[in-house]
Length: 311
Ligand SMILES: [Zn+2]
Image 1 (tube, rainbow, N blue to C red):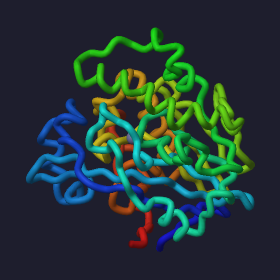
Image 2: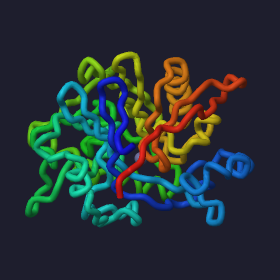
Image 3: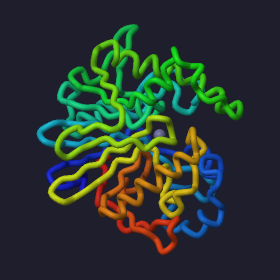
Image 4: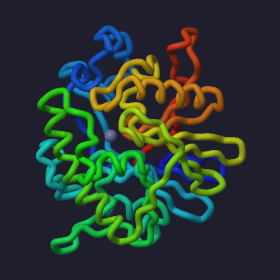
């Protein structure tokens, strides 16, 4: 199926980009090589390339229709962005707007945009180029962003950022200014930005909950309708190996220990309530139900979502 339902909520995915990024050794440095090898049969090819060790990822937007409204969760990288800190995604050009249209989404029909956090691959299509300016890509939408991320990444507060650990972090931290300026500030200037603290109810079925660690204001979106549940976890998970062991950190987690706590808490709640888990970057069918393993620090994959993507 190209769309699935959670009770009365319809869910579609619109993929902006897919391909290899760096290596899993780089991106998930504390996952032992044996774990990849032991799970090769299902990690390859959607999540890992065993020949190159590449981390295989997608960048995508989850499109939700709930209560007559259209809600987007995360907005990808965007076209034509100046991203010297991430050369692989600098000046990207994709037909994402056409793919969104193919999914039946006109820009003016989007009611709510949720950015699970302020990283380049989650806020890009917040805006589009209009002459020399960046303007909201979804002119009627309310954009929901955590105050914690907003204030942390606002260039006026640059002194609050934690010191970089290495040259790569220094480049990425410095580059946050560009992301804020082309993807967040124009939304605020247009009066479309709503900052939330301590979570937010979007409607009867959807609510945002903080899950800090990857960034200070990282969030998940819980969906519940007619007894069915889902949770959109953003970058709380980068790879299914982190379901097997939530302790496996991602190199891009700003506070790895806090991210581990959030990851375990979200997975526990998902397992307890049989919520389908929708991460930002999983290939394959994109979402998976989880269950508690015999070991308290481990989970198992219960079943993949029945979700195909057109094209
Ligand atoms: Zn991401």
